[in-house]
Image (cartoon, rainbow, N blue to C red; front, top):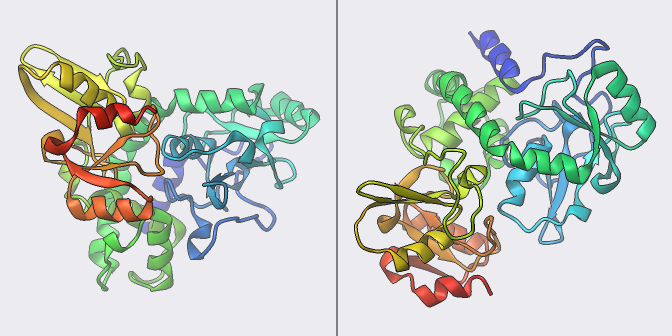
Length: 363
């Protein structure tokens, strides 16, 4: 059973397509891990092993100091939605030398025969034009700069997240649930951790569930972090659904590109989608009559929740697609945790949100 788990997990995220020259995304030398603590082995966004996906690994700095390391440019793009990450601070692993280099000077081979990491389209970086061209000749793909590769990653986020989520719901979560039920004998306080890589490190260090292989550990961690923490498996799909043609009526941006921030207002015969609570509230103050339902996306679970029952954190160091945001949470305790961790200004209920304060977030 566990062999099947590992194989399914590998197929899900693309480690088995090695190409004509047996290219592997895994580190073949000692990897450079820049994060602090035991969680440094894993991506803080998705929990994937940095060593296994080392040749697509990127690093960034939060608040100009705190270093984070991702399994892919896709997870970097996700983090850029939440933090003010400067492009000049981003580094990437040169797929040829396996050394960290400034991403701004790298050349990316996009769309080669090598499967992507957390994305349908692969993006591998090289320090020299010669190395990029040699790889492209053998494995296909076009050569672009970092800025172009990042834009491509950002534009495909919606479809990539949808594809990965569907596979996790069908395959990975059930596997993680079985491991949890059969092998975890100790109590795990899931809410004691702020990131999935911290949870993974604790499971491994404290031996909560016995000896686990990486594929087993990842399946278990995803189940605990994305399912067990917020409800049962049947409810994991309760997210805000956005079509690709829906634009925010306030700023005009395509909302599907920002699923982590999506919000909606429903009327009897129509609805409107927004790329954040801030723009939703701007619309709400001008169009209050006839509203049947309002939904926002809970920051931690990514589930759709009733906007009128949510708690909102204002003035934190986490930014949405349109800058400063009102960040929603399903309960007050999680809002308080976020408030303390991200140096926020205040927590408010829906009925206490003031119009002038919403517009002040744009200043």
